[in-house]
Image (cartoon, rainbow, N blue to C red):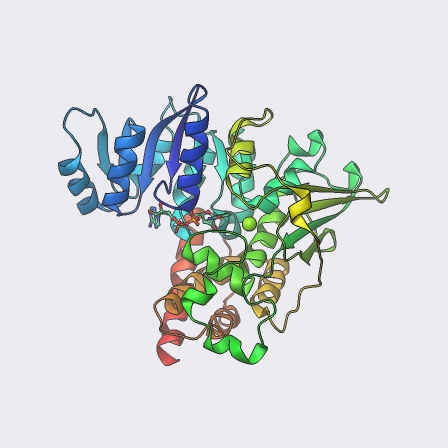
Length: 395
Ligand code: NAD
Ligand code: MG
């Protein structure tokens, strides 16, 4: 039995994780559910999954949850941000699903890594922000980190066992690997007239052709910033160089990514676009469990196509690839700027095409500094948000 903490339980990945647990009640138990402040949703999850702990980061939300929970349920309700670090480190916790959205997920994800837990990593932003520090912490604690992000999970599945066992410090070349091919659908605006992009609404941006996801990552998919963040994520997880990483646009989202070997072989992982597959894979690795996902029907798939990414259409992808080359400060700044610009776009304050402008501006304002601790990273994140905010106010 694996006792699981689900960080971001009320979100899209949280829901898929709980669905996989429900399929396999003999092997997994819900120890803790964590969410920000959506009390209705948390209450519903508590009644259904009966966790030992229900944690709301917002104290008022926690107090309301406490009031509304039936007294006979022995659920401990807690709150606060700093408390998350001790929850993920509890001795009875085996596995932590890191699925809080954005930079807010960094401290708790890193705490789970430091506590040496089995960490199922959905919160790509934490790795984008902390890169080297994250991998070092993993090495020091012996934590097992398994990639939930469908592309990285696909890549992981296509790697030889020796590489799988050394995530973060692996040697692709000596394993005979020439390239990691990161696929992305290109999102809802892949074929839209370029002139129309500035008029696209949040709802249009969130209407992904293949995946159903939270709103932030949906906008990131429309701008392909998501692929950019994933490029940086892949750089760290697979210790990959720029020459080893390629982005391939694949509109059908049937192939979730590929690994190319020096003998000419290319291994791909395929499946229906349903996050329960990579989640189930991470939960059971190296075994396999039911995920509740329909088997892929090749007769319905039809054609698979592949395109080179167009940086004019997707400037955010280019910004991320360049930031990755530049280093840790650039990726931390880009992540913070992007969270601010996406939030402003979702709130109707800026145009879709302004997202890349804000992100680029913040990168140019970046001052050289060393990032030796999580405090340094969080300070730079705050600074970048301030710069983004000033620029947003001028737009
Ligand atoms: P979502 O918006 O649906 O859910 C976000 C969750 O985070 C919610 O439970 C919310 O309560 C919690 N949260 C938000 N702010 C918080 C804070 N300050 N403190 C604590 N909790 C907070 O997002 P999602 O789509 O489930 O994505 C979650 C993460 O998984 C993101 O990092 C995303 O990039 C990654 N991811 C998602 C998908 C997907 O298909 N949805 C795929 C790959 C990776
Ligand atoms: Mg992904």
